[in-house]
Length: 194
Image (cartoon, helix red, strand yellow):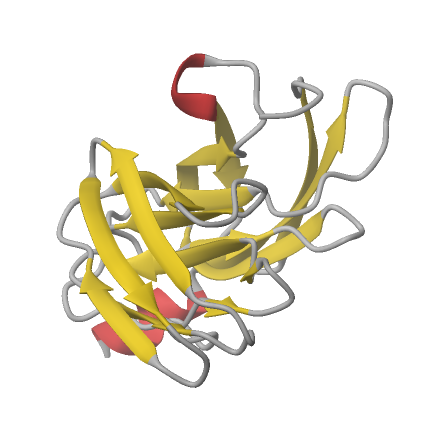
């Protein structure tokens, strides 16, 4: 009986993220803390926990994973890579490994983790470690949808590696309806480059 009530009182958030010129912003990570709190249980996302090295780049460029996730780093390039991070949530180093080899690392603390390769300075990627199942990344059109949010005022956090703000984040308070969807747009100020 209670389960049916909570499902009936769930709304969706449709968010469009644009820069100060009105252009869509891709790879922005949005996390939501709904009014009803975070449900208990393991967090899983449909996109998995793999960040590939291919064409001398990390793919995807930004990956969202739940806290405690082990991320695989397969190397699909003909050259060796050396993955590292100096970020506070996860300081680590994965020594040189070659084509068709895979290494992994477990992310135990929430936050943004910037990745690099000691061999290829132009390579950078980001892993956003989250403690909520309500998370998504904006596409090339700047849009994303987070379904199944409890009715009430939700705390919505937008993160992007180029955002000009403390911790590269911006907080919004969004009233979520008991059913249907709420559409919002958010403007973020971005730096030109890292």
